[in-house]
Amino acid sequence: MHPAPSVIVFTTLSGLGFGLLFWLGLGMPASEGWVAAVFFAIAFGLSVGGLLASTFHLGRPERALKAFSQWRTSWLSREAVCSVAALLVMGLYAALVVLAGVRVDWLGWIGAALSAGTVFTTSMIYAQMKTVPRWNTALTPALFLAVSLGGGALLAGQVGIAPWLLTLAAAVQLAWWVRGDRALAQSGTDMASATGLGHIGAVRAFESPHSGNNYLLREFVHVVGRKHGVKLRAIAMSLGYMVPVLVLVLPFSHLMALLAVIAHLAGMAASRWLFFAEAEHVVGLYYGKR
Image (cartoon, rainbow, N blue to C red):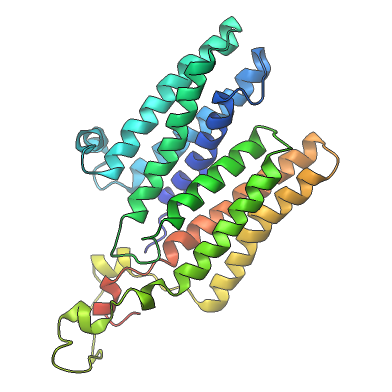
């Protein structure tokens, strides 16, 4: 799949932002006043910034409001509804905490659930796509949630929880890569089934169906060199998981905590780029690209 920058920014920032909102909704950290305001500002900034970035991937951004109308059948629509509900509930919760010094626990729990639900609905946009075998697995929502909660705990300063959650997220990431590398081969889909000519005999590409580039090739076929992919996976694993965990087990300092967050963001950006770039849409089989 084409790794569009807007979608990479969206999935990276919104996942981290809603992850932080999840922990804030549970009262972690238990801060008030301007300190709480800073945490909420970061969480809302990441969440809203990511959601706004996603609109640039729409063919007609001015019609973004229509995304709310198909919630019965569309995971994209469910994500839109869930994200707005989470932001509204957590906005009220944040106002009470920051302005009145009142922490309404049940309101925070609802906001936390909606925040996690937003990340889940985002992941299901990809996990439900049978045409992309690498995404079509329960490991996809598990990965999105693990990364979001681990990164959110890191931003929330939960030193006791974050290393364990990030380690878990790293394990899920490795499992997702291992399973994904053989997903297309194990899906039973090949050039014969893609062209519908398998009943005749062995099918191979004689020449491209088109003399030039087209929309399908631009959006759904993106080939990553093996060496390039291995290098980016190493960057994602080391910066996204290993560096933050290592920093968190060392004596705490705000400078090192900032370094851990920056490293995590860079690693997750690399991971998200690979998430899209390595995704083999079965339409590529028709063009002999797989």
